[in-house]
Length: 129
Image 1: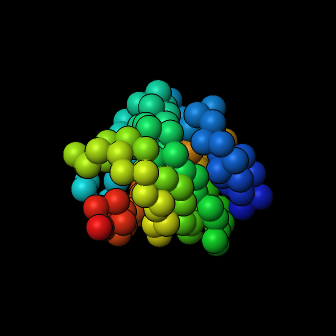
Image 2: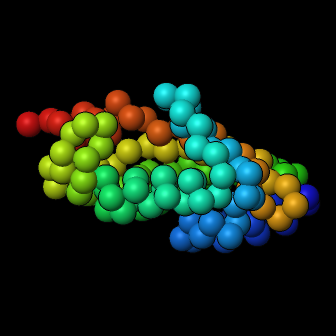
């Protein structure tokens, strides 16, 4: 894919995490834990549970880089802790957590993502007194 095509797919996906931009057999890996989420439906469910379950939040882009078939997103996950995350019940606390995601794009779809979320920062923010 060209840089422009890659950028178009990722920009569209970042608007609302619409799973139509994710390949049926895509794999998203949570780098801090090694957890792999496989398949479009499982990925959509996981992201919805994070952004609109454990949290009510969004990824606010701070930077993005694009190459032929690859992209990198730097962002901050900003919002409120509204549900259980890592065994911690909802606290209502505000969160602002660094995030970096690398993407592989082919055939007009995201094939793979490697998610670097600073879980330790998130846990500190929701458990601090």
